[in-house]
Image 1 (cartoon, rainbow, N blue to C red):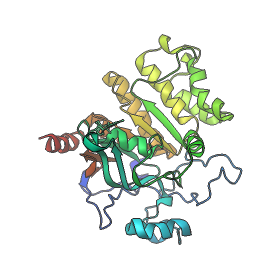
Image 2 (image 1 turned 90 degrees about the horizontal axis):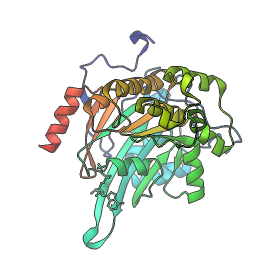
Image 3 (image 1 turned 30 degrees about the horizontal axis):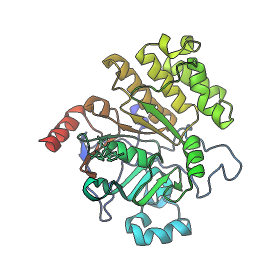
Image 4 (image 1 turned 45 degrees about the horizontal axis):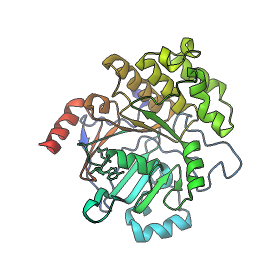
Length: 332
Ligand code: ADP
């Protein structure tokens, strides 16, 4: 895709910091606005999960065109009391969102507020890095957005559904159908081949792989000749590419990547990040990545900086230098 065809890329100076709007929301860069996300999920209509792999509509987002005329009434009325800004910025256009998201661990003397009224939205088809000092709440934010951890108060949306009140069984299904994970330590099952590892999430869901997507992943990740190997027979970079294919094969709404390059050499790390970037640009994938590495973060469209459970900076089109500078400001 030529740069000319990227109307969503700003011609303004390379780096921008965003400040929260009146409602406390950090506004993400609006790269693409999907049209197919309605308030009833395709699964509920007896269809397979919606297709995040089609190239997003790259028309510049103009509010009048992009925002649905009306929110589902339940969301709209609930929003009024919780986050007035939501009325102008419906979460239906987002892959994930948190509203007044608070997570407290423990109580009494051991009480820790890991997330403190975080308001954040992740537009579909964008790549976001989450950074911040150790203990700032990065993992907690990721776990809460992915439905791995219950929140203490506020609201969380994923794939068009509110997670906060979902029963455990529905949450598990929603996660299985809509979320892919890439971990620092790969987390491949040692007794399965690469191919079996990749297909495992689909097997668990009783679904068949999309042949075109399978070919695209295996070729793009360069693992066609490694499919019959077990993880112990693969290099770290190869294992992480297998894990990446496993995360993408279900066509998830969001891929959460937790320090995906943390255990890789710099060349393997750069390869993986380039592939993630390609998935966002050319396949419309949404990726949310926790990282400590400014260089890794520079592959993202946007970097959120956390400190003490709050988002304190939001950098669009980040460079490694800009991210390092922002990190130094937090740690200094
Ligand atoms: P980060 O990923 O930025 O290092 P975390 O999200 O892991 O930060 O942690 C944020 C805060 O919440 C820290 O003070 C941490 O000690 C605390 N915390 C995280 N998980 C738990 C837990 N399961 N029980 C108690 N405190 C926790």
